[in-house]
Length: 174
Picture 1 (cartoon, rainbow, N blue to C red):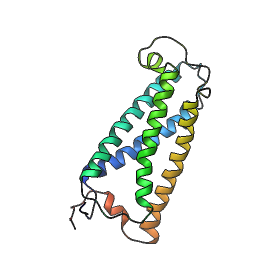
Picture 2: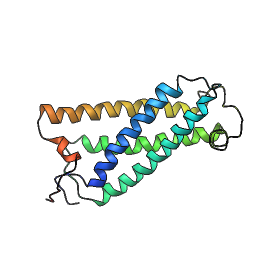
Picture 3: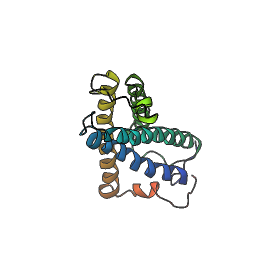
Picture 4: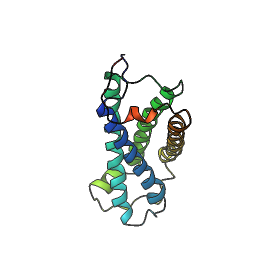
C-alpha cells in the first residue's frame, strides 16, 4: 500500500462523524438508558435512537474500513497505533453484535420499532448479551481515552504534527 501525507478526505469525514456518533451512543447508553427504569415509557423512544444510532455507526464503520483498505494513508504514528485502530473496528462490530443479540432475545424490534405495546423486560441485566454489550462499552471508552491521550501526546509533547494528518489538506503520496 502506498503511503500519503494525510488521510483520504472521506476517511477524515468518517473519523470525525463516527467520533461524534460513538461518543453520543455511549453517553446515551451510560447516562440516559442506564439511568432510566425499564418501566419508564420514554425509555422506548431513547432506545429507538440508541439502536438506530448503533446501526448507523456499524454501517459507517464498515464503509470506513473498506475505504481505509483501498486508499493510501500515512505510516502509523507508532507500533501500537494499528492495534488500537483495528481494535476500534473489532469493538464496534462486537458492540453492534451484542446490541443486536440483546434486542432479539428481549423482543425489542417489535417493542421499539413496531410499537407493539408490549412492555420492556424488567431489566436487561438478565441477558448475557447485554452484560457483554455493557462490558464492551467500558472497554471502548477505555480505548477512546487511550486514543485521545496518545493523540494529545503526539501533538503537544512530541510535536510531530499528528493532528494535521486527520484534517483536510492536499495529500502528497510518497
